[in-house]
Image (cartoon, rainbow, N blue to C red; front, side, top):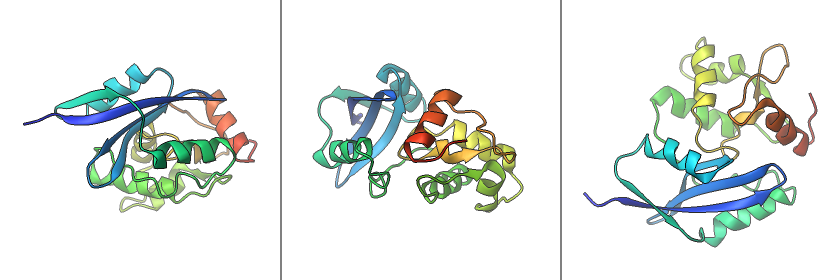
Length: 171
């Protein structure tokens, strides 16, 4: 079986380095995005997929343009970016629901669970957030604790607060 070729490009942002991994077949699909060193994200994505090869280079214009628009304050810029990650059907439901949370809004982990086929699976919904490999395109930073506090974030609670503030929300 031939390896799936994934392009990795990094972007400087006010939130630190943003690495984005994408494959291109009939359409460009983001398979990983996250803050910090690209190697960390690459390792996490490789652990979920069989036989991938990482190629440095430029992502297609539609992705880099979305990043530029997002950094310019267009909080809807990632809405039409195709994203796909490997996970259980429940996690897929959670990730789809996260994309429905509007910029500048938050929902609780409990509310996230209620948007799935397992409405009482609050801890599993929180785990889906922690396993999200496509932040901020799948905006897990918009999911908070029921008491209104931030909760955890894979890139640290301070960055979660920064991202929410960037969207016009302060907690």
